[in-house]
Each structure stands twice: as C-alpha cells, then as structure tokens.
View 1 (cartoon, one colour):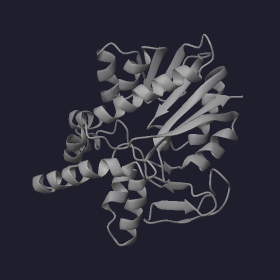
View 2 (tube, helix red, strand yellow; view 1 turned 120 degrees about the horizontal axis):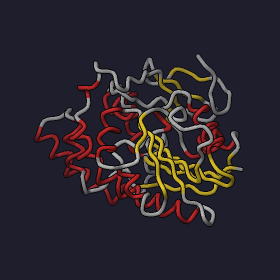
View 3 (tube, helix red, strand yellow; view 1 turned 120 degrees about the vertical axis):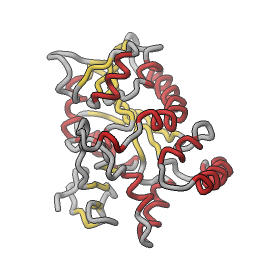
View 4 (spheres, helix red, strand yellow; view 1 turned 90 degrees about the vertical axis):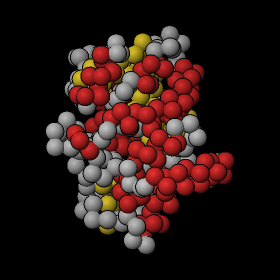
Length: 284
C-alpha cells in the first residue's frame, strides 16, 4: 500500500477493499477510477435531476465564497480561474466581482455552460491553459478531492497564480457529521451511505477525503500559507427534497419520511462539524 501523501506515514486498510486510512494524519484515500466522458458511464447520472438537486445549496455557498474571495485578494486583483466549473454556477456569481474563466473536463456539462455564454474551456487543469496564462485567484469547488494527481494540481496552482494570489479549496470534510455517521453505518455492515459519499460507481468518484489539518499540511508544503478557513452548510431546506429524490435509492414514502426528519434536524446540525470546509491559501 502506498504511503500517505500528506505525512508520508503508512496507510492501512479501511472500511472497504478500495478504502485506506493514514493512522498518523487521518488522510483517507480510495482506489476508485474516474471515467469522465466514458460513454459506458454517461447514463449513470441524470444531469438535469442532479442540477435541480444541488443548485440551491451550491449557489448559496458560492455567493459566500465569492464575497470572501473579494475581501482576501490584494487591491487590483481581478482574474479568477474556476477549475472544474461544471454547470457554471460559480462563474455566474464570481463574474460580478472578477474577470472569470472556467475549465471543465466533462464535455456534456461544460458544453452546456458554454452554450449559455459562459467562458468555459474544455479540458483538464493545467493542460487546458495557454502558456504563461496566470490568475489572481484559483478556485476548486468540490473538485480537488476528485483529482488523483492532487499534488501536481496544487503545484500547478502555485505556478499559475500571480504573486500574492490566492488558492481556494471548497471540499468535503472527513470530520463532518454525515461522513462520520456513514462510517459508523459501514462498520455495522451498511456500506451504501459510505459509498454514496465517496461517489463510488459515478463517472468522477472521490479519491481523497481530508479534514482541515491535513489538507492545510498538504498545501502549505507546496509554497502556500493558510489565510483563513471556514465551514459552510452541507444541508439546506431549499432543494432538500430534490436532493433526496436524485439519489433514486428509496421509495416515494421513504423519501418523504427522510425529508421530514432531515428538515427537522437542520437546526441541530449547527452543533456538529459541517461536511463542507473552505480553506483559503496565499501564494508565498
């Protein structure tokens, strides 16, 4: 088994054959293979249903990130790169404050955003960039955890940022309430929630799970310093029912029962660690 990419320690077998954990820094990894643009996996996701289920939550969080980024950048900083821009929701928000460019490897999703007039370039980061192209802000929204060569992506971000530029990572947290709950379920034999959070079987599964401390250690070893971090809501009432329907794993009655339970639980979730963290790093 490979050593930990964060601390170099030994990883041990996790809760599934494809899952591993570092006992030292609690970094988690998965031996799951991405299959973006593979025709054999295209049918797995109903993109229209996915868009409807996620948009409300993500747009609210994106608004916060854009406002926060505008406060963090140095005077005169304007250019922003959104890596894995997907449907273009973040580009729409960020364009109110920055000159934006998106990169999206998924041809269907990125193509639809481009047809709406958004500045989306097809391909992978950093290969899709032109020689010498650089930015004041680079953002990975729910993307960095999907990239197998994560160390290369961080190094490329450092190289493509202007002096004093900032890197923003918006990613799921292994310390979050729902992820922790899914691990408890997995230990008693119910793997489905755990597999769902890793997006096992989808075209772009998670291959990393971090928490604040280990993602900070990984990034700061590569020419960055942490300037701020925060938690964002991982569940909101707006769009919740559509999100439950999108999973397609339960019947109609069970779906509504879950909806009522989660709706009542939302105020209580503030007492527990969120499943979404945002870390802002400045290039040294």
